[in-house]
Image 1 (cartoon, rainbow, N blue to C red):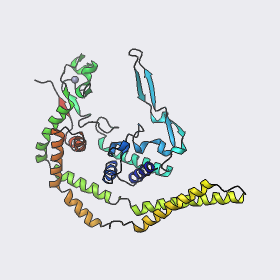
Image 2: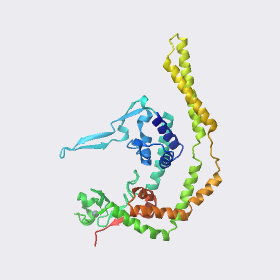
Image 3: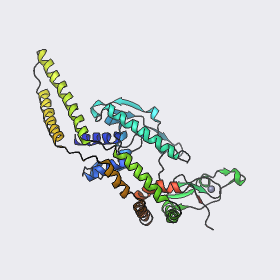
Image 4: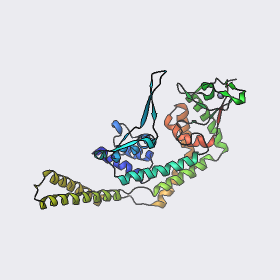
Length: 349
Ligand SMILES: [Zn+2]
């Protein structure tokens, strides 16, 4: 039941415009234990819409079980079983109302927001490779072979190599020969080298100004979207009152039909009443911070001024370079991918 509350809250926060990252931060700040007692991570909340992973995509919270999500195939050569994801149109749903945690209305609101966010994301990436998915690594989809022009991709142990060469594809431009570029490089080394080039780029471009403006606009946009705790409690309260009315009606109907009184119904009614009282008390005492927008915008402007952005980005680059910190790399992704179009990899001379 407590878990259900958290799940419901995550759905409400997301539907109201909070990002999975901010939700994770909020829950961690409040000390709410995450899945298996670990800290909350945005990925666990966001998941993948198309794969049905993550809290926001868990169909069981919407009272449905999904079947036929994957197709299994046995390779005749290797006898290995491989799983392939089925298209969402092939999924089979069966109702599981007892698993339901969020209302259908809330579920639909979350799906709608995911569509909006997804469209925005696709728009920004539409001229790149890998348009449908969020890039997996810092340089995913940006790497090109100097010899055949083909993509460099991870093969084997976190190591990039030319895909055409690996597949032994004959290349027209090479007169039907296979690509001879045998250069491979570990992901970390390549990412480190690219990150090393960034600080120089910062001096010639007004990138901190640009990011500062973007951040302020983004954060300002979020200001209006802060969900009101009071509204949430009021909503919960009215839901409970509706349930109470329903129950009371059931009890009366039984009475009218001359059927015996059921203790379980009375207990439920008592339980609801206790909850209602508690919520009413909370509603009376909850204090909303004053919505001083002007002041908050001023604060944001100071917090995200170009100098501070510069410091934050340099710190991220340091973490990404020196500690190979994946979280830092992930946060640098939009900046790196904004500055760099393609990285061409050639043979070591
Ligand atoms: Zn190649």
